[in-house]
Image (cartoon, rainbow, N blue to C red; front, top):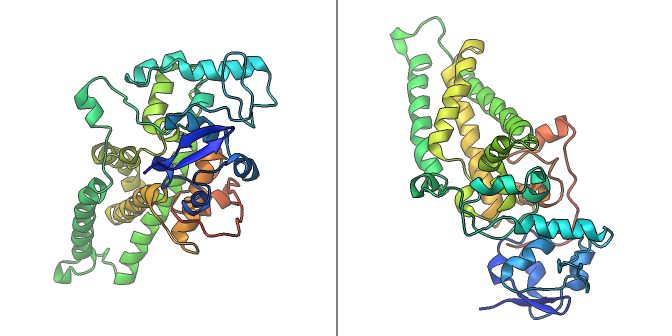
Length: 335
């Protein structure tokens, strides 16, 4: 059933977007068949919000005026000159979304950062090869299906090697509390790694280098451009396994009981990936931890791209001064 709203005198069917709307379904329900002009201005919607309206198969004049080239002028654009407005329209039109995007990114360099942070509500294709393309899709349940057996195996073998080892124990035998401490330490290491990777690797500036732009888009930029694609929001298991082996190499030289710490780190990683998927597609209740993290992560996507890097925790954002205080709405959002 259609869910039509009006903006600037035009109709938009946003039924497919209701569940993904960062502000919840309940904030939209009362506007079915009505104008959303005032409420979009009232709640300070981002450029992406206006930009995504065009993805719902209805053209609209968002502020009552258009540029000479026909580009819709959003509230944020209204103070800009006509040349910049025309450029933003032209930038998006350079790519053919019916074809693989990875080989087209040279068309928007060196303006990649501006383009990639303007989200759209679409699916995208990366490679022309069906085999390569299939490797970029990962249903969320494949992640725990792959990692849980590995985690359980590591926990079992390490527990019986260092705790329940009986007469075969070495001098480095551990008490249960010590074993759990090493697991927890590995978990904490992961939380720092999660923040570091997201901030300094996933959000590095690729400049105008085509190769670096392609790498960035492949590992994270795609997620910001099409943030509602549920098949591209968890890390594929095989690349994750390769990365784990690479990161484990220095760990085994600098830390005691490295496999136990690796196990704790993998528990942290699995927690992170499941939280990341859930804050995009889940329906947490107001007052819960995941409700706060869903709103926090939405802020990162649509307001502060250079802050709010924590996904499973805000702790390192606080430590590195990239924390964002999300606005208190005074109402409970429902997705």
